[in-house]
Length: 313
Image (tube, rainbow, N blue to C red; front, side, top):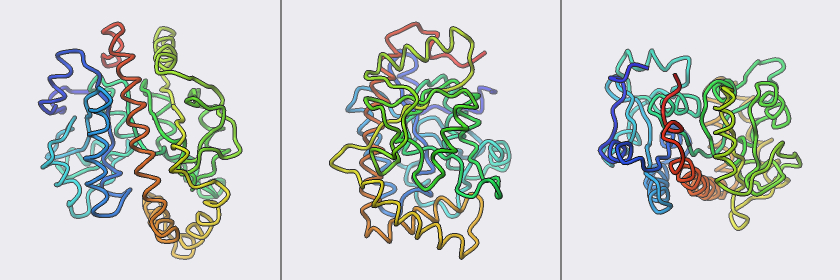
């Protein structure tokens, strides 16, 4: 990627010079994932969590025709308050830049920008995946293909539980993406620690994750690593309980013909209403938890060869 498209914040630029650990953060959670004012409060809290865990946060967004790697508090406010910001994935990344529009980055777009900036670790809430009914709608998130082609560690609380989780895991396996349960043999489901599905692999430390990434790059395997980090037990909503809310929200989306990129924000919003805000509190808790784990992994990688943090050739 042309380097003049990348604009680093002073904090991230200093971390790069010093070889300090950096954690990429998406911005779609600010624009589409949480309601006001929790969106801005959470963005600030997650950045604070990364710093307290010993790394530098690099929230990513598209502003004024440039890819911003690290945002000031004023920029966070701008993103949070922007009118109709573009929710950017791979397909509309270049178009949003060319138009100079405000763009918030999804998992896929954040992974693209982070690797271009030489950042190895990215913390999010939950990845996108295979939507329910995809066998007829073909609605499959670009996040899965991006994980297959971009060498980066993505720490999430599994995939969003509104998805078809068995099919999501199957596509990840087919695409050659390692899915690693962090301290667990179970595949978590965003708000829930377990889903009844197994995580294909397990790691119990940040160093183990760093070892996997190093070996993948040594073998010139292009895929990233999905670290499935369960929400803290005190904050979870059990999977069986969430299933009723998810089914109701999905039915509402179907009845209102909600399609494409609008599906996930719509369903998340309805679930927040149906749970009287419990889902939002759990969402915030799991994002912070993922940020802490991501900072540990970034620190483990920063202590290794400098080549681990360079962009792919």
